[in-house]
Length: 232
Image (tube, rainbow, N blue to C red):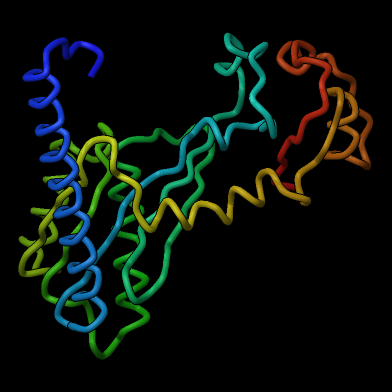
């Protein structure tokens, strides 16, 4: 809008914006129709694949943004939270360990695992014949691995048809994003360890063991009040 100098340019910018918003609205309507169809038609399944922002699941995990750590996150333990939401059934969520590579293989593994659990949960009905898969626009979803996995599901007669699609850029919020709020409360809620120093954090995480803050990474952490998550 700032580059539009003349009334004609501003009018053209406004027209393009209205067209874009109309396109986004239509895509949202189609998404709602697919989700509703999966709820009422036993022959169809709707799967939403997405992953939580990995910077929200690093360990140690601070409640607030720490600008002092801009060059230090590479030393943190990086975990990944990926999910597959099967409409009208349940959400399957997997958290990986730092040594597990993220990407399309992980996203597809989570989805196939969800299909396996669904099949066990429906031993008589089995899987539907058609699947609609909503993916995020990141590189771990839009690539040959994902497309190849969908083709493999068809060739193995898991589904007769599989359709993949994504929402417009900048408008990718979906139902799975809302479900990530629960682990977010766990990571940053009352159950998180609260500490002002690395030594205090170690005493809370390992209450029965004496630990000294000799680790270079922990020693470099800023001396500010933070919430740090532990699996223990």
